Each structure stands twice: as C-alpha cells, then as structure tokens.
Image 1 (cartoon, rainbow, N blue to C red):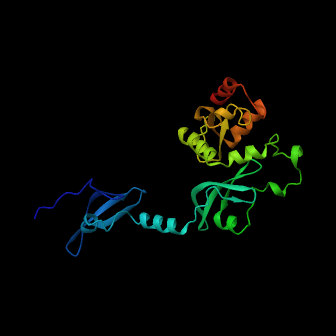
Image 2: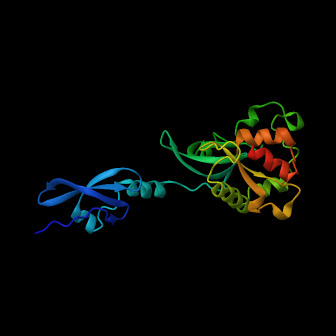
Image 3: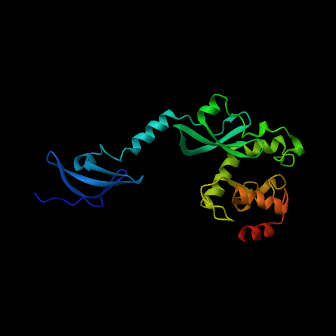
Length: 229
C-alpha cells in the first residue's frame, strides 16, 4: 500500500512536520509541531481519531483551569485584582493587582487568599497624605470606585491591546504598564473610557511625563509631542 504523505496536516493543536521513519508495531510515527512551540512524535492513528490533540499542553491547561480560582475583580485589603499574568512562581498563580495608592503589584493567589498580601507595600511607609511620595492629589472615593469598575478594567486592557502591549514612548515590552489619560481622568468624565484618550506608557515614562507636566496635564498636543520624542 502506498504511504500517504501527512506533512502539513493539522490535528487539534498539532501540525504534522514529517515521517520519523520509525514504527510502533506496524504504525507510522510522525513528528508534529504543537501551537505552544513544542514538538511531539505521534502515531498517525492517534492523530486521526483525535485521541492526541497537543503535545500535552492542552491537558495541563485544562487541569490548571479547573484548579484555579478566578480572582479578577476581587479586593484583598488595599489590592484589587486586575488579571492573571499567566506566570507561576513556585507553582503559585500570580495576579496583577492595583493598590489604592495607585501602584500596581504582582501577588500570589495563596498570599492574597490567606491575607498575607494586602497592599503593594505602601502601608509600611510612615508618611501619609500630602507628605507621602505616593500622594496622588487627593483621589476621591468615587474615583477609586470607578477605577475598580469592570468598565475601567476593559478600557485599560483595550488601550494596552491597541498599543500591542508596548510603551508608546520608549518601546518597552514585558514591563509594568500604565494606561495614561491624555485628558485627566478626574476632570473629563465624558471621555474617561474613550480609547483615543488613553495611551500605553511604562511605569518610568508615565512617571517622567507627570514630572514634566504635573499631576493633571491638560495640553494633549504637548503630551503627544513628549511621547513621540
């Protein structure tokens, strides 16, 4: 019987690369590439009957999903959970959290749930109010509530996605990002969640912008010029 070339065929997450030239019993073994980047040798029968759909990553993801409790939107002390950062530290799920002081921090799910982590660390500082280096100009409880809302989370994530998770000023990837309001959040309620009013900046560039233009910069053209230089 003439052998059928399966090269290029797709089964689940696996794409057939080539015949390995080996047999298990009388069955052909094919080398496949998984969407996750791994490779795996699979019997052709297991591909065709859908008993093997990945290198094993699919099962791992399903197990993790069943075990993992979604903490998005939950509040622990001063921290509000924003999202899963798709990272594990010593086997623990890590979450990106927003602190009441305005900072963001990654925290392990176990530390959040057992009460060990309640702030970004700001509570360890003695200075408070206008004397604190984290003073944000008196953010009102209402504004804090809005920043914790699903709408704000959606807007923030949409800004990052539009900018390809890249700082628009320095081009940094894989760092802590801030979604900066070109027109101040506290003054321009009607465009708070307008995507054109947001720009992705890394923590350093965001801080630098406010040093340059103050806590509530309003000249959009000057800010855009600063970001593009």
